[in-house]
Image (cartoon, one colour):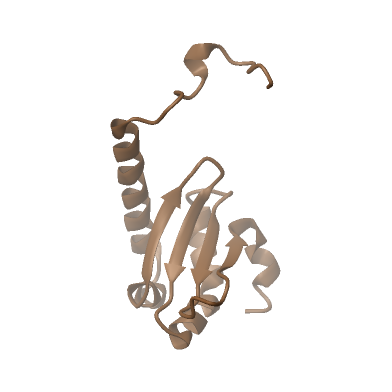
Length: 122
């Protein structure tokens, strides 16, 4: 095991307590609210037709979108550039995960820094 280079006071706590979990939930809810408000009307409409949430873990922030049907799934994919651009305002390391309606299909995951490669395709 590697010895950390930081003093003990600067290291994360060994376990997360209820207050930490509550603060993370509040942060996720606030980011979701501001993300929704920063989107245009079309993108807000797309998000409103899905179940979606923002989650944060040690690696990155992620926007998870669960599509109820393939039509909405297609609308979400067509709005990836706009969603990614808005999400990048909160974190350059953020990701978007689109969960298709068929549970047999794997979710599609994209980092916001990859959005520029898809701009011309979408």
